[in-house]
Amino acid sequence: MDALVIGAGGFVGNYLLRQLLAEGKDTGATKLPKERIRVDGCEVYDLDMGNANAVSRLLTELRPAQIYHLAAQSSVAVSWKEPELTVNVNVLGTLHLLEAVRSIPDYYPRILLVGSGEEYGRCRSDAPLTEDTALHPGNIYAVTKACQEMIGQVYARAYGMGIVMVRAFNHIGVGQTPQFVAADFALQIAEIEAGLRPPVMHVGNLSAKRDFSDVRDVVRAYTMLMERGCSGEVYNVGSGHAVAIQELLDLLLDLLLDLSRESVAVEQDMSRMRPSDTPVIQADITKLQTDTGWMPEYSLEETLHTMLDHNRRNFGIL
Image 1 (cartoon, rainbow, N blue to C red):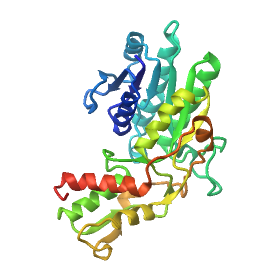
Image 2: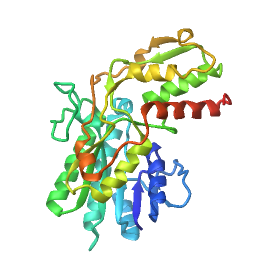
Image 3: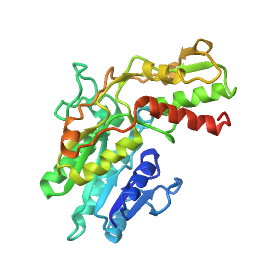
Image 4: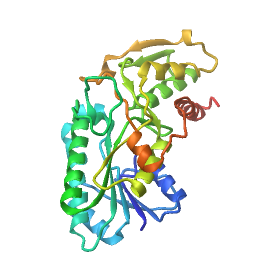
C-alpha cells in the first residue's frame, strides 16, 4: 500500500484521500465504526487508536509506505469540556502509532504527524510565527498537539524514523462542522436566507485574528511534505495572513441573497466565547515554501462563497 490515512473519517481525511487518489496512490483509510468514508477507490478499516494491539496488527498487515496521522480530537472548545478524551486520543494514540511502526521488522515508512498552530499560544508580538518561535499553548488541545510533536521528534532522533511534523493553522471548507467559526457563520446565514431562523447572527470573539486556508490547499501541502519534507522537522501550514473573525463575518455578510447587511443583526453569544483566546495567530510559511514549492490556490473569499453556496443548496435556495 502506498499511503494510509489514519483517522480519515473526519473533515480533513476525506479531502486528503481524494488528493492521494488523484495522485495515483494505492490508498487506505482508517475510521471509527460510527464514521463514514465518502470517498470511492480506497480500502477502509475500522480502527481505535486507543487499542495498541489493533494498531500494530493493521500496520503489520498493510505496511503502508506513507502514514498520514490525522486521528485527533481537534476542537479547542471540546478540549475544554473533555480534557481526558483529548489527551487520550491525541497523545496516547500517537504513541501507539509510533511504537507499532518501531516494532515491525524491516519497516521504514514515512509518517506525517499533524499538529496545530494553536501550539504557539499567546505570543509577545503580532509577527508571523516561525517554526522556531517558542510554544506557549493556551488550551488543552494545543498542549496535546505540542506533546504529540515532541514525541515525534524524540522518535525521529532516537530511532531514525522518517517522521515529518506539521503545525496546521485554521483550515476551512465544505463539510466542516459548525463547531468551527467559518462553517458556523456560513450555516447561520443560509438558515436566515431560508427563513429557518430570525435574522440574527450569534457570534463569539470577533477581534481574534486567525490564519485561514482552504482545506484543499492544506492537504496538498501535506502530500508535498510527505514527499519533500525533512525527517524530524516541523513545518507551518497556513496562508501566511491573519484575518480577524470580524472580517470573516463581513465577507460572508457581503454575500447575502435578497437581504441587506443592515437587516441582519449581530449579537455576541457568551456560550461561544472561550475561557482563554489568543489574540493573533499567523503563520510564517517560508520553510514550507522553500522545501516544497507549495503555494495556495484558493482565496479566502472563494472558499467562503463555496461553503455558503453548499449550505444554500442543502436548503433549496440555489
